[in-house]
Amino acid sequence: MEGTNPVNKKLAAALSGGAVLVLALSGCSSSDETNDKLNTWAKDVCDSVQPQIKKIAAANASIQKETSDDSAPADVQKADSQGFQDISDAYKAMATAIQKAGAPDVEEGAKKQKAAVAELNQLSTAYADLKKKSDALDTKDQAKFADGLEGVATELEKLSNTGSNALKELEQGEVGKAMAEQTSCKSATSSGTASAPAGSSKS
Image (cartoon, rainbow, N blue to C red):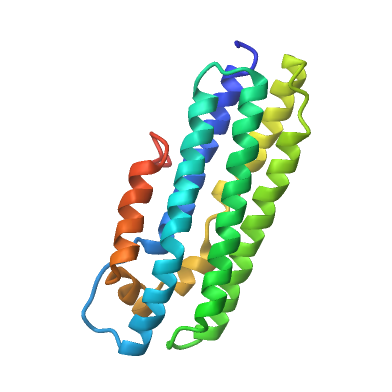
């Protein structure tokens, strides 16, 4: 599979960057100075988000495993399709969870919540689009498949480099401190990191 292997590596590298994106949601420092109302909000969000972080990490790992091996185009396409669908669903579920939790009890909480929900929905749509592009690739022609896969990898790379500014804004200050105290956010960070593809540190 010499024709697709360099592209596979590019796709795998882009996925590694994407894995970092969601982990921002629970990588906060802890503090004792949080209010009960905010703690309740943080617990609701963390409990809802934890399974989705695991789902994204598992999807990333699954896609990377298939693209790291010299797999047949059809197998790569199948893994990509399922992985992108899972990631899209997970971001959608996270958006719904933050929407349902309401605005955190902090300054400009409603504005930050709205921006984070919009960002997560955009990510969900973007990964759904990647699934469509991946599904449309011609697996019978290795050269065409490699070209198409490179396009998918480029899109994924752009996506992973866009960052999660609205999420970071939401998690700053008291919100971040409250989330850091939640067991489910702590376990989501550790399990997400463990499940993330190898070499997920960005240069």
